Length: 110
Image (cartoon, rainbow, N blue to C red):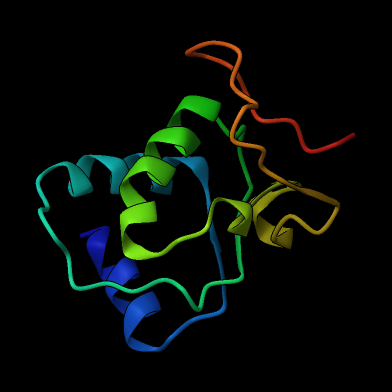
């Protein structure tokens, strides 16, 4: 039930959160069937995506879904690091134009 993550972010007015590319892909699928959800993500300042390669197409699809709920594109940050360390090794904002093809990965600024 990936939408429960969005419910919690909205309910608690989260400012920071994070997940893996796979979670964004699951949310993309779940959001396909949602019309106007009840969420407001204007309070979110940082959403880290780490622990596995970050696929640009997945991120851009996620942004297309989430901007209608107030998520700003500059909030997403691709990080390098094992899931267990939460991406503290390297982090960079995700530029909306970073995709160069359907299988492109997002750079972390290294």
